[in-house]
Length: 349
Ligand code: NAD
Ligand code: ZN
Image (cartoon, rainbow, N blue to C red; front, side):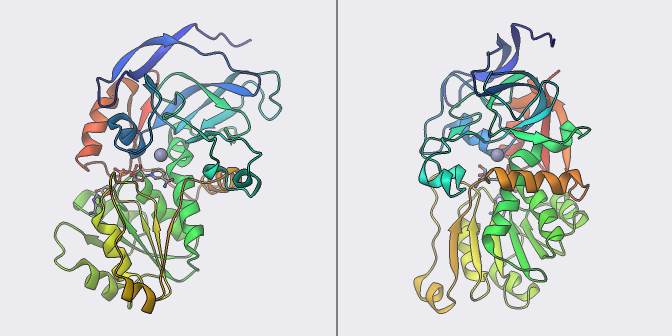
């Protein structure tokens, strides 16, 4: 039998933007269809920062334990759970649960389920040592996997892999990524390479220029110093990228991407800057016949596929590990755009 403590360490906030308190809280008991995961590591996604700030038009649970890239070990399960055994490795994803009986779930569009439960947003997430997940949606992680490195795959990896598929881009074609040096962007470069694409990265600073190139991006365009980003992207891709994945947390790059995308190309919105709109001039939208679409995490099949690429050693997770108690410092760096890659929290510290 696994010894489960009655209390654990967690980072909790009582109100949006309020103090992030590292403290002891009770360990929850899983319901009939749930598993309890002893979270060893959790990635810090920019979504967690949005959740804490409360800047999206969707209320969070309060008080809230954030986090949705949690990797750990199953230590308890409800009596209806058949797909996990105690001791298995499992991941907490953004999509904690969905109804599996609505039209969206039936079609495999589980993230679009109107009854979706969101980890670290509408239910407590992975910034704690023991977190609950609906067993049917928890990610199965192969035995022997490095839990710190797999953590960012559980949101960032799944999301960008899904977005590339949604873009319809084909091997040999150009993909532009805005926000390429951040958590989602650095994984997007790698999934794109595996899928046979040529990558141009848009972000800023020497650290991100270096990292994106190490990961396989062919060109770096610094948005802060390039006078005409649109012309530059069109020039280096000889006519514009066939698709653009926008993971930048700013409105402007979405608009620019509609201007530089190649005729018949696809602009994918993934980043979620608050109160922002995608502006695309109608005449050129029609004449170039471009597609503009959103992409939202991934379903269970996409999760398995994204994890499989990682398990086969095809995706490097560019992480820095710090203790759970250091979450406020990570948010500070993220707010300033100073994180190249992903921070992962060690829940034992
Ligand atoms: P991050 O902070 O690690 O990376 C964002 C990057 O955007 C940074 O490197 C920053 O320098 C760059 N950036 C800022 N302004 C830019 C500009 N004008 N042009 C180009 N790049 C710019 O964030 P992340 O964790 O990668 O998350 C990115 C966004 O994606 C967040 O808004 C997050 O909420 C969202 N997200 C969406 C989904 C989804 O399913 N659609 C899933 C996960 C995260
Ligand atoms: Zn995320």
